Length: 101
Image 1 (cartoon, rainbow, N blue to C red):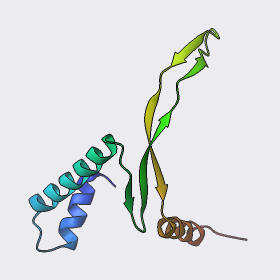
Image 2 (cartoon, rainbow, N blue to C red):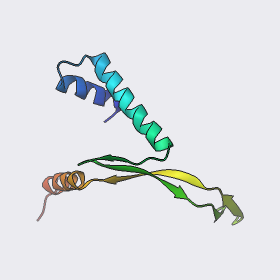
Image 3 (cartoon, one colour):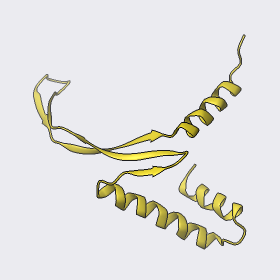
Image 4 (tube, rainbow, N blue to C red):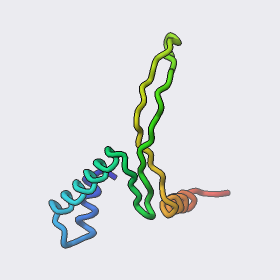
């Protein structure tokens, strides 16, 4: 699902929202989430999952072409952990769609 798909779905689900209002709501929500993550905060959406920012320590890696040691600096990476309800829903869909012998 793309951002525009999400806007269309939101506008269709809530008749009182215009397309422009739905677009603004999605924009504000995503910007707020991005700002919180930039500041290192954790975002938890019950039933869906949580977003956290993890720190990766600096390390020494190897260049695969020549084996030369390369210093990789510290960085922050985004991590998503799905909630129990989402994991179960995805698992139900997967097992319902598969054909067993």
